[in-house]
Length: 427
Image 1 (cartoon, rainbow, N blue to C red):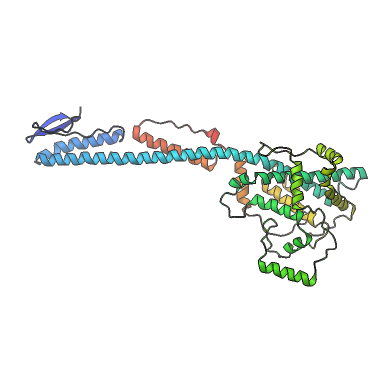
Image 2 (cartoon, helix red, strand yellow; image 1 turned 180 degrees about the vertical axis):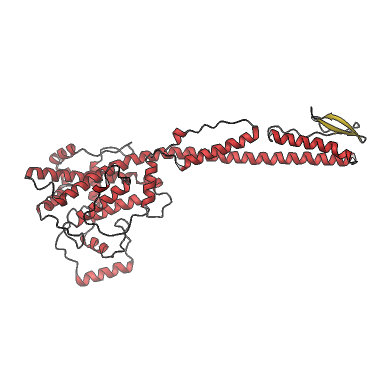
């Protein structure tokens, strides 16, 4: 047993180190305060050794008992302070790590929910965009409509279905928008939501009047993306109205076909969706059901009659001979729509998994600004789609667990197992 020093009447006596402070006629006994479980075993050994050495060393130097007692008391007080503050620091670190672990649990739960959102809109919207772009390409290249009247009618009907199906999944994105925005665009500036800009561009090209399309194109080579248009200032609006009153509204020789108002787009999309809001995955009406309902339901046919008429007119007139979208002509909306659908495929399928790159050609592209934050959007889309790699949050979690395990081992010298759930943390 470790031994201490008893100082009575200046005579050094040996006494157990585990004795305690005592005032009395027999003398004053010293002990090192017992605070087990705070310092490591090595630290305790050093303190005991220092205490014993000091108790034996001071009387050998000829110091009186009062100085020895004061020095020993100072050493004991210092060790108590060290133990106290080191314990507080360790407990604070443990609390911080516990908070981080709780945040990671919440992140993993949100991560799984967001993966579900990706599954609800990305694949269906991409597939419907591919189907519709192929119809537009064949319409311009005249590869499917130069047949007999019956087959041409069926091609027009399927074209109409592809337009309706795409608008159905655009409506799904609108419904899921708030949750989609929360993770794919977190931290982006106001109005720079990449997918929202893409969808808005498509809605604009389909619904804009010829005058509005021309005014957007007239902004020159520095024009913004059609989905990120800037509103005119008050002065610009007044000036344009004055010019229009002086020279009159422009007259366009040919009406740009396939114009669908915003309300009409939403109505068609709502008709096409067959699943309820919040479903695990959304579905639209099949082509068979669409064809049957279009033949039997007059009120349903009303929403698609003008679309079919425009497609028929495009197939019966002179084929496309390389006209650009501007100045406006009958192919303008078709060319702009086809270009935006190719951009949408590049946005949702950057690795060309669903459709190879050589099938993504723009017929007659119009120059305008780039989508905002498109590279960051694609990166996060791949991350949340389940790429098989660990997320940055998962790596940080493992680092926190290792740090916490090291801190506890320093305290108790016993390894504390924190299993790393690599299967759950994988993206």
